[in-house]
Length: 117
Image 1 (tube, rainbow, N blue to C red):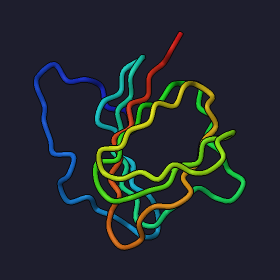
Image 2 (image 1 turned 90 degrees about the vertical axis):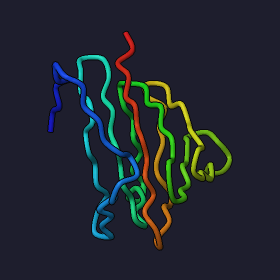
Image 3 (image 1 turned 180 degrees about the horizontal axis):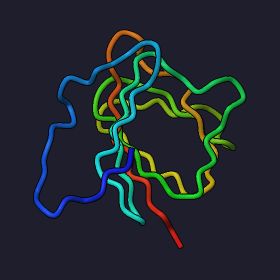
């Protein structure tokens, strides 16, 4: 889903009913422009498939707003454990994967994807 910036102010609440689903992560695009995409992601016990790595052409700044998670970054000796308020900058093509998200409560992420020339 592409969300074009409206010509009038909009608002919302990042922590509203997250709509967590144990069957799959929920991705909600909040803003999408040629250079910036902002998503709210809700996880409930999900992780990246075995052997799968994200390798994105854009940079990604991500913050965990609620829940808990563990993020593995290629080349680092162990996964980073994330708690609410923890953020990570992932430069373009920084291979990473979600190792774990809390299975008993929603993990809510805010991801800002930046096209870097």
